[in-house]
Image (cartoon, rainbow, N blue to C red; front, top):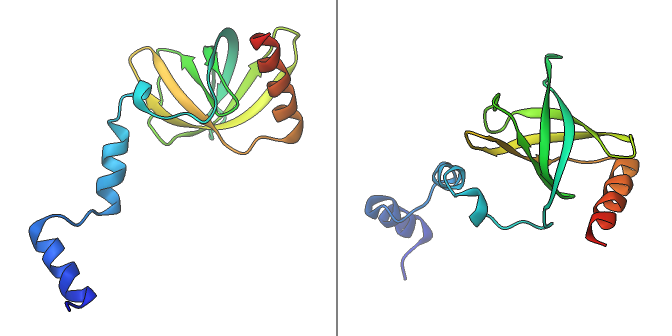
Length: 134
């Protein structure tokens, strides 16, 4: 019976061993439509303001939205992994503050994944999305 150390050595030499960097590199090239989403996105057209960590802000449009994230239409895409704050204004003029991270991008904009949302923002966003489904 081969030891774990010997088996790992054979995998390294044969190239079958996967490194975590290999997995992350492949994840970035998976087309956005092939990724699995926990929450389905709904088509919307809502104004957003994006705030970067160094207080730079710019406006854009949210074109689809879910509890898990959104697609932001903008010419000024940010690097994948960039942490931002999204100020989302709903039709009833409620303004949500949503911490997010850039998950992917295209020439038309970028997909962001919501980070930990506050209870109020989660509730208001859930109610708004439910009203769109009716």
